[in-house]
Length: 156
Image (cartoon, rainbow, N blue to C red; front, side, top):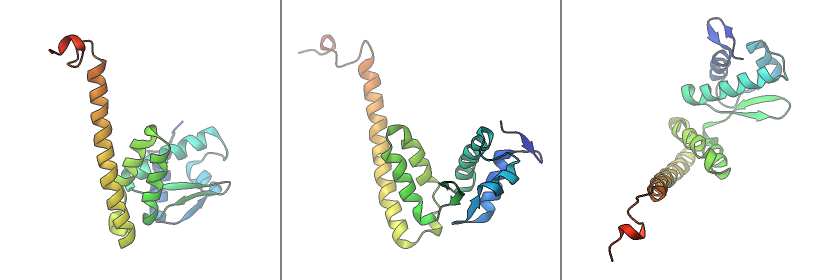
């Protein structure tokens, strides 16, 4: 699925090419197709792009969003918080993705207003994450057969 081009996976080659373009750049499907040597639309094409999205975020701190029917755009640093919030709103399964987006956001390239918003959202998300982790531990404890809150374990 992720064949090799020039001793690198296709997704790595695509991620490098996208990282070089900078923020706000639009890359069309035919250009991506030439880079990864896969026809658009195809399952292999979509799989390589999805893997490249992960590499782009984790290695380069950049995010691309789909422009329906045309291609992809690297989003501006000021839009990272909005992108992160979209993942949080989708539910608990997207929580980690939203947290990763905030964690990798290029704060030094944000405007002062966006940086202030980033700090507020990041602080709240960390508190929420800690609360959820605590709830998970509590639920695991309560699901055990000999947890401390069973009626027979509480002396009255």
